[in-house]
Amino acid sequence: MQASALKNAVGLARQQQHLFVATADRDGLPHVAAAGELKLLPPDRVMVAAWFCPGTVRNLEVNRRVALVVWDPRADTGYQLLGTAEKVEAVSFLDGTPRPDELAHPVPQVERQVTVRVEAIYDFRHAPHTDEEL
Image (cartoon, rainbow, N blue to C red; front, side):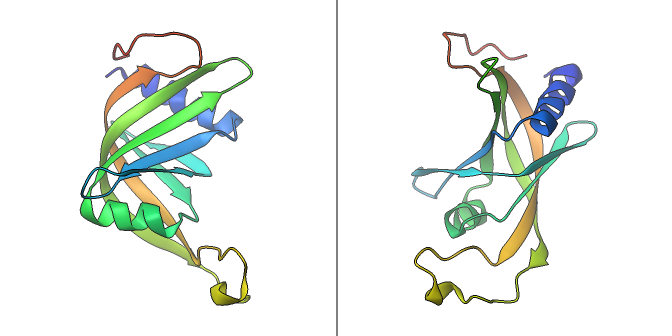
């Protein structure tokens, strides 16, 4: 993995609203969530933050493997970061108002930060591409 590719991915995430977190449960059933922020934690870690849905949190409790995708759809350029979640921290809490059971679609009540040790980085785009590590 090239350090420059990791820096470029984090830089692209700052410019884009397209940051996705893919996890899987114990049996390998995948789940994809949108995230809000990606920060570099040198030398080979990133922190991703979001009001993650319960499926993401449950998956990380039993399977720490994760894929992060940063993508600029206009330029059709991006990165797929593969790694292992090392730490999941609660950083912010809603006060429960409105209560989740009062909503048609309950919202997460806890914002979390996930520290990921990045083990491989691949190109990500809609156009045909290879899965050669950057």
